[in-house]
Length: 213
Length: 213
Image 1: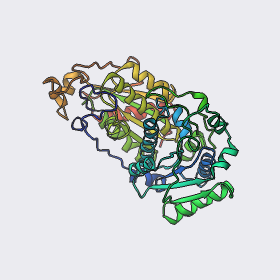
Image 2: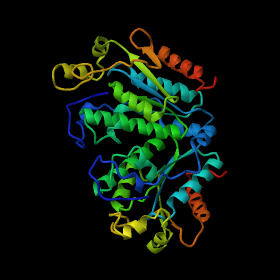
Image 3: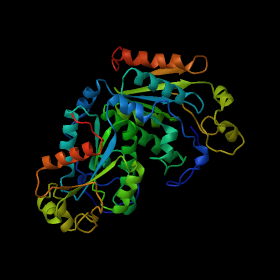
Image 4: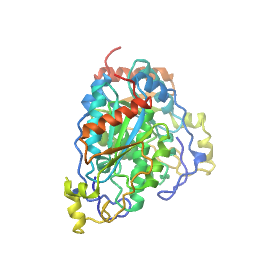
């Protein structure tokens, strides 16, 4: 443990004073004990697209197959770890950075990690990919037209956004940048959630991240 | 997912706009699949006391016994998730809060989590205990006299603190408040690290957090 002068919030501390501890147990050992290959399935899409639905069904299926998983839900993260963050551009980016860093720790623990997070901007998802590493990061775009997500409006948020009660709402007065090269696109408009679950599992099998069970 | 007006950094967002997602898979299922009871072993003590040594040996032993674990090292956290934090009182408290929140997510994933963190103040360790819940939080105080830790000085930090090169260093010009009611005190001055490992394992067995193997 090391300590240095008080520094203002958000100023990186002098790295010379922080000593990276080398650990006895590593990711390979933890993952071997779990009998699986850890990775992150990063699920992006509009509010109401069906990210949480996909993530929950996928986790239930993985657990039923005896895989060790964790689901990081963007909304739930905002209740606890990220409760100090609002919705400014800076805070949104920090929200995504922390989600990615937590996912990285979970992957280091050997887990298959699902992240369900609007993560509207290309640049922030790219940062998440860099935090996680290219091989272990599977970007899944849950695609529905805005009109469909807005018609569903499961939490009544689009209505509030249209009336101006909520500002900076993704898809209304804040941009959603669709992924240019996602690992998988799930059509959550025409297809049932089970189809998306199957597609993710097939991709993981194909990439050698899951063994057949 | 929900969004609201831009709010300044550190202002909690209006909770009315965040909807807690209920998840299909819960902690009990994840822990059952791992065949263990998740908990946090929170290891506090001076720089140089031997926290990381104890944590590493303990994790190696748990893994050898087939337990699923993760070790959150305070120094390593400052390289990534907490890289935006310095050493002001506010940033130190935030450093500990985030470590506790990450540990909470890991416990929710079913893991036995070890945290090695100076965490010098009573109030911050109390906050960590509240984040984690009383039943699952085992506070281990790695106790050595300051003179012993300073004589060891494995990273040369005490020397820098005495010369004034580093300020606000715990034990020198920043306080370390020894725990009043720790779950366990490890005497890392007179006893070898293996004795501390054994004592933690015995405590976990006694509390029913580990089954005998």
